[in-house]
Image 1: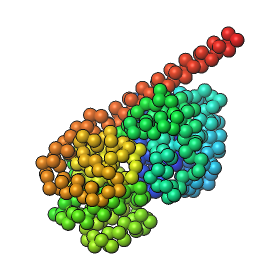
Image 2: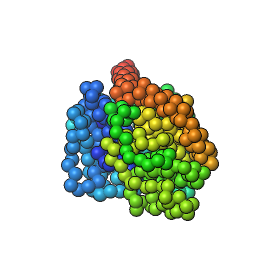
Image 3: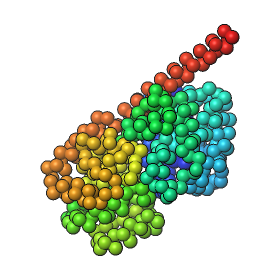
Image 4: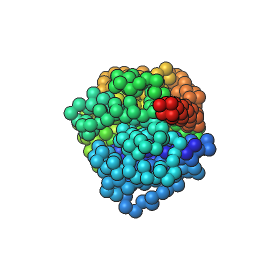
Length: 402
């Protein structure tokens, strides 16, 4: 198949850890690579955000990243990108008229807008993965939500117009149904993990004698790292290592001040962004990895920690309900004392840590390797293509009969 992946703001070539660079970047890059390894030809279309970047960049044998000219060739916060989606769609329409893909898979809602508009007259089936839903973001962030005002209505429209929706967890299906998205169009295919990189055997980053709690991810308030800092007040024998972002990020500054206010500066270390190649060793150095966002469409970090054989404490939201439940510890979001109790229990019981680590590793290896995820995604593509073909044949027959 010729497969087009649309990822308007999350460039698979970008460094992970910035404000708008995180799990979606990893997901798109890994999915494209795994699909190509199954023999498909994949082009990832992403917005050009630098003037010096080549138009086409090879990512992997069978995978090309195209930088689409839409808006200024400069970084633009993703919430300010909607005005440039018509230009993005125009470019895709011209490209696909020359060489039509067999299927289009849009990632994030603005990608869906561009993909549906570009494919409208070409008869190319479009699938959508939202990665996050505006209704959920608004519910948790309230007035702090910076999403464009049209987002929620646009997502509902995309959900009804796309030929298929690839949800990343069961919790998302319920949200989609509540939005009026037809359930028969929704398939659940989770994110995956690179099992060649994330595994229990390998180097371990240096550490001291204290129990180590690790938090890793983007430096934004919704990731809940402040909750972990608050919980550390009740864990006097533990240190917290926070990886992600840069020391001068607004959230990093806030967390540094929060730690100082609670007298935790000597036990809270913000180490900034960590290269992907160094993440497994850092995870293996931890006694427990904590991921307690307020909401989470999937959650790649807990899955990577599980694959590394490290026990996980995660908030009972979104994808964590599928991945962590039964082989890790779930806690309510934004509840420092509940988190502290869960961490205390784990840190005091090496037998429990070992059991959860083994269960998590088994689950990650048996269910979430990218080759398996690519195979499941391919099956969804083929079903949608077959459905589109039948629809087109029925339409032609009806026209001929009329």
